[in-house]
Image 1: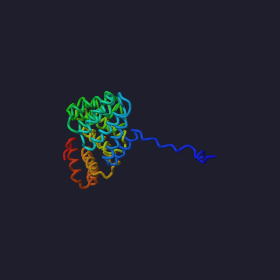
Image 2: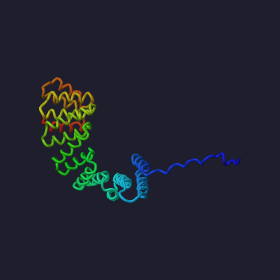
Image 3: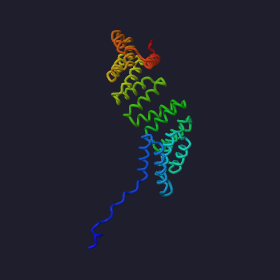
Length: 279
């Protein structure tokens, strides 16, 4: 018997990496701050995807979008713009390249162009809450606060347990003088992020604006339970107790606040100015 008959089949060769795996390698390199390696990986993924069949190419579009995002991260705006446009040509109805192009336009002050691209992204992914949020913020920059509120309401409705969207909507309502709705939204934000002290500070501030001093004291006291050494919170709660009035509690919190640094003093000044409490 020939010895070669006992050797069995040759070991299987590892499969060549697929474009999605190369793109993941690029993502890892980007997270690690290795921009050049990330760009190299994304370029390779584009080349591999481009070897596929003609027609609308989802893979090519996705790879070019990733490459464009990497170029944008590296402050190579012209290269990023080129990749996003090519991604859109490869698959015109993919939302991602439109969104990334909107982000690029916004970063470089082209607000109207950014709004147009965000709207196109939403057209193809209407249930993406984050897209609606970014459009809302850009509409604020453009001075269209009423439209911005509508988009932010959609985001909060689509992601009802996302505290940040409720927080942002509360801010927008406040700018339009819709105090009751602003209070309701920040209540939602604090409810869905019960360990976030800042949302309770904001809730307390809105209660002050509404003249609900006891509610404000309760919200601020809760903020302090979450962040007991926060001098800013002690100072604002002291202000509230002066208005109730509970001077003993006010003095106690002022003492616990201690000597505020410049940052906290400026923050207290701004809060007092916003809510109309005299210094």
